[in-house]
Image (cartoon, rainbow, N blue to C red; front, side, top):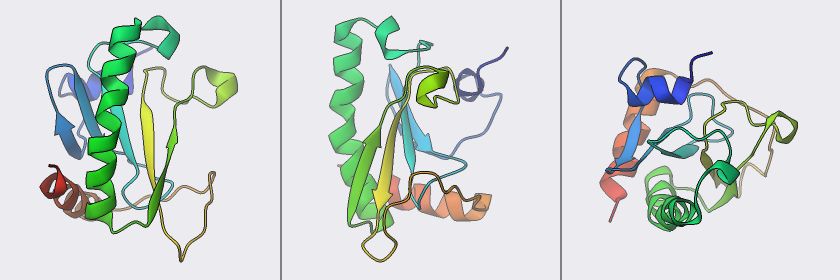
Length: 135
């Protein structure tokens, strides 16, 4: 079985990139829980966070504040939630470590299960706003 996130990293699938460095990327979730839902992933494939050494776990989580701040500014969100699932029983859909940064809006409430399917144009515009907010 092929990994969708590895396909993105290899350039075989498109993604609306927010951030890239030597070891990590962040991009908009194609089926977001809310506007600006971003995924942060390591470039090296690991199915679960327990498959990673502690230094690499620390490195990926150390990116979250910077990216989350840009997501808040770029999306106009009021707050955000973090999620990191490991294994099918935990509702991990893609078997590649990823951290969800889910923007939250005071006027919408907090729903974990509702997904939407925005157009590529909407995602491209939002990704550009978030990228421009990266400090």
